[in-house]
Length: 180
Image (cartoon, rainbow, N blue to C red; front, side, top):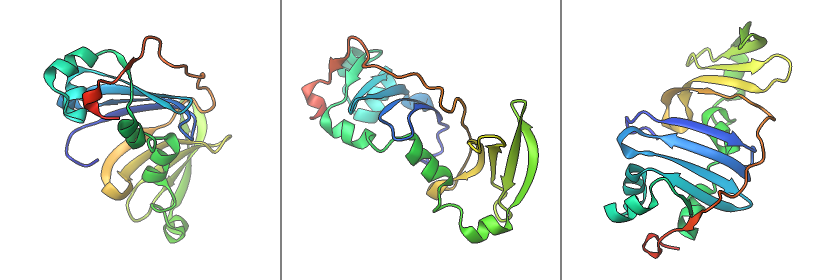
């Protein structure tokens, strides 16, 4: 999203999004965590999040703030595409790096968090991708992000280390005013 608001995102879990936590903070628009477990989506946001994202009345936002809420069907549908795989595809996927651009890219060795790594630099844009030398996992992307061309840095850590998440205890159902 390129609306001028600085956003911090932390996404941990499986590539396909079947078991993950997505935390987003957008300044005055608030912050929230979305947990995906067994096809269910659970959202825990602050008052500002509920007002800005769902247009909930202030009284409803106060009721929901800080609680895990099982996302109703309409909200769950919009959350289903938010996965690590879709995030990577949008940021650095095949639609963003052509074979011709890759052929012109330069590579160099470096260290990343004290481990050997490779940096690939796009000759045209200056965007860089850092790969772990041993596993070839993407460690960092720095440059224009996907179709929005928003500048940013994405750091990926903890490959294959995510614990299995469970349904948050005490999750409540969304008020009927928020849709199904």
